[in-house]
Image (tube, rainbow, N blue to C red; front, side):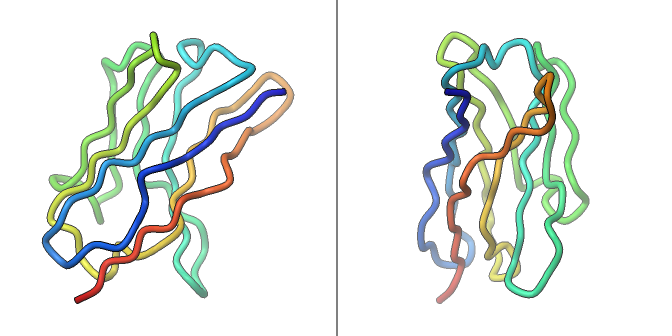
Length: 116
């Protein structure tokens, strides 16, 4: 069964850091570019970051640029999203995605809550 599983979310105070993980099973993640997305309550899902298959190309939404780092460990079939200097507006469910041969594959999401 092809599956993406996110982990690492949680509750953090403003200014804090979290590292999210996206681990694949049933597919070789090294063959795919991976994107992270987030969806806050009442808002549309938005693209946060992307990474190429080799990791040599990355890009970020302006809202997280300079505060986030996307990386991958293909040997572990895992992609990471490190987020620093977190703000309350970063509160959302974070999802990873790959574009599989038969369509997009999404994880179930991990909740990030930033609050004092």
